[in-house]
Image (cartoon, rainbow, N blue to C red):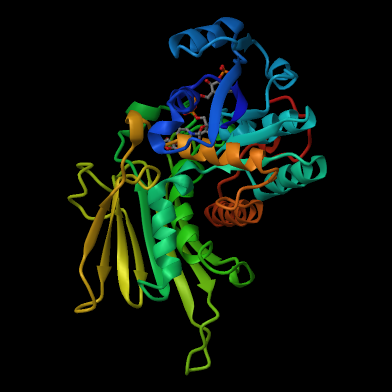
Length: 384
Ligand SMILES: NC(=O)C1=CN([C@@H]2O[C@H](COP(=O)(O)OP(=O)(O)OC[C@H]3O[C@@H](n4cnc5c(N)ncnc54)[C@H](OP(=O)(O)O)[C@@H]3O)[C@@H](O)[C@H]2O)C=CC1
Ligand SMILES: O=C1OC[C@@H](O)[C@H](O)[C@H]1O
């Protein structure tokens, strides 16, 4: 018997639309017959009409209630879990609203504007016994799970370097202007929080998450940021992360692994989107390398290359069942966590979300990117 969870959708923008399309796909198409999803409520802070329109356009089955406020949504007793799909600037306030109403939460990336806010959210969820997860969907792709398994199996040896690039070659002025959330500091915009987080996801998945818990140590960080001349949010950020490893060396110096996380919205990592320029992610170990192709947030295939003479190169494609975008895998994880009474997901633990937010805080400090005090605030409630 499938365990069904009932979703409430907070906001009706681009990603809410994509997420709901995936929720509506039949889980059996992806061999998930143990869980099921129902969308029972949608709220738009713009108007009830916008929420109704969203329900109609996406053909969400009855019963599904449209609300004109997020407060009404979180008060709905039929909702098990809220999906927060607002801009980064609003996540802290929106998640606090939901947790205080006793709701479980899946919140879009970047989790919050800063690490202090993330810590408060995790502490609040723990105190209230509620489930909370940062929606880093890529971690739940079968491709990501397989790559982590390959690393843990030792097939590519000790992983000492990961290079990841999440970069779009946009005409920034033309495409994003000054007010879009991508570049607007009032909405915690900029390449780092929006896209750089995926490069960091690959660095952390491969150099941190794959280690036993007691060996996971936060990295030191050196970075450079280029501000977008029209708003001051970053259009380009490059980060060098140095993770201590437990491997002894004969020089007496501790060996370190390095992550290089890049993001840029003016030059593209993969200009023709065919992988002609090579993989966007390279995971380099002492016995071989894994190369990952496609956007780092939605990878499409990987290649394992053993060191010379030590085996065959193999290539694996990632299928997207039922024409889905790939967000259903993280939704399935939420359903299983709720079914099993877990407050956090093993794939994206609170502790790791906090460490990644701390890295982004440090990168912003080094780059001089300061957001308005109102959205950096750890006070709740604050009217944004
Ligand atoms: N996982 C992924 O692949 C992706 C994740 N994202 C993440 O999802 C979140 C939302 O992004 P996206 O959907 O692209 O953004 P959109 O601008 O398309 O939608 C955001 C929605 O948030 C609501 N909202 C509430 N307050 C504000 C405000 N002050 N300004 C603007 N919108 C507001 C609005 O919905 P309403 O009027 O209905 O209340 C709006 O439609 C971000 O955290 C982003 O990083 C985005 C794209 C892809
Ligand atoms: O999370 C994301 O992934 C896809 C991108 O297009 C989008 O800007 C970003 O928010």
